[in-house]
Amino acid sequence: MTQTSDNVTWLTQEAYNQLKAELEYLSGPARTEIAAKIAAAREEGDLRENGGYHAAKEEQGKQELRVRQLTQLLESAKVGEAPATDGVVAPGMVVTIAFDGDPEDTLDFLLASREYASSDIETYSPQSPLGSGVNGKKIGEDAQYELPNGKKAMVRILEAKPYSG
Image 1 (spheres, helix red, strand yellow):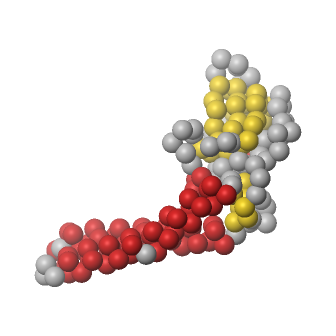
Image 2 (cartoon, rainbow, N blue to C red):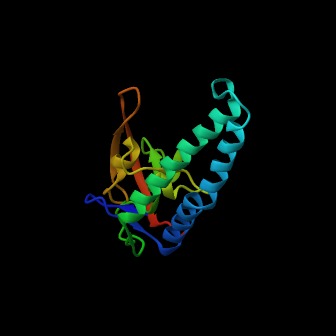
Image 3 (tube, rainbow, N blue to C red):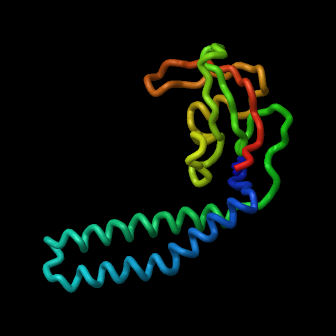
């Protein structure tokens, strides 16, 4: 997935299909399931002291938020190709960095939106401090970003290649 400055999110066809299937499930069968849970909990009586009711309502709220997020994401999505392999860090790429230029202290991560996060590899948003620091840099360049404590950290870009899933 690649996000551009004009709020277009580039997705691979696979990512688009996966997010669309999640939206369809949450908008259909999952809504029916949560409505049934709420109805069953409501029949138990006093709603002020009904933990099952409140848990179901909270779950419904989280589900509806996810539906809105997915809807917005898919409305602005464009299905396209992975970023070019020109050595420039961009969203949708797996980036290898060395902290403080130490080739022994490295990190591989996917520069992408959280919707595209994978359990295989750590994911950093292009808007995160590290993500914005490395975005647009070339292999071999140093990038600086701000740590949560306000100090600056330096990393060197060792590799940047399109994420292949």
